Amino acid sequence: MNMQNPSDATLKPVASLIKARLEAAFSPKKLIIEDDSNKHAGHAGHQHRSESHFTVTVVAQAFENESRISRERMVHKALGDLLPDRIHALRLKLSPPA
Image (cartoon, rainbow, N blue to C red; front, side):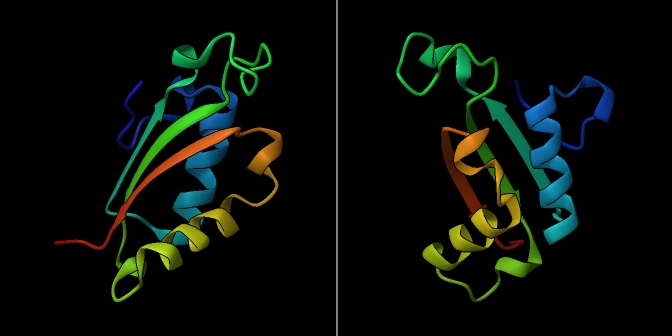
């Protein structure tokens, strides 16, 4: 599921929370949330949840002059309690605007 500025009505609950928190924290130029959970059915981290594994792409000015590790920490802080309770795996693609 690719989402670039989707309407909230089309998002599943966890993806909707991710979108809201990242928009509030970074006002991104681009935000794509991919729900990869179906690729992990039967794995230990899936645990019969419909949403647990995500790839998230964020392009935001806040990432300018920040290292990869710093960008990841910023996103982890914004997502807070969703990690690891609601999100088991998170692949991040983070960059400043070109």
